[in-house]
Length: 104
Image 1 (cartoon, one colour):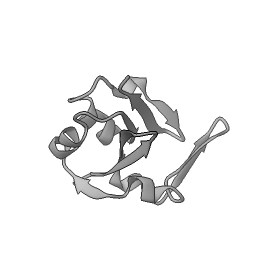
Image 2 (cartoon, rainbow, N blue to C red; image 1 turned 90 degrees about the vertical axis):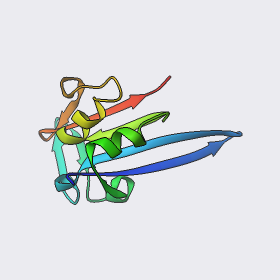
Image 3 (tube, rainbow, N blue to C red; image 1 turned 45 degrees about the horizontal axis):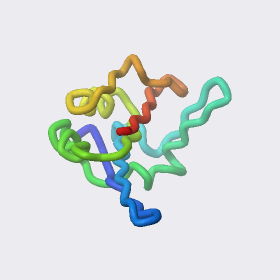
């Protein structure tokens, strides 16, 4: 499976929020930078590193979440089948697409 994903939950003032972080697996363990921005997938690998998932499983994980943090073309394309994100919306850092989605 080319994508790793992890579900994070946090409760503040009695409200639970769910965030899914997903990343193309081959990008983990490296850092990318451009234009003064840094995408450090070495230091922040634990945020993304959960289970290896298929595009279908990632779609299931995204149902009802509050926000999504996506890194890499495969993760963004898979998420785009379930939520309204597309690769062309992503900010590229060191050539790697990064996108955040918030369900408001």
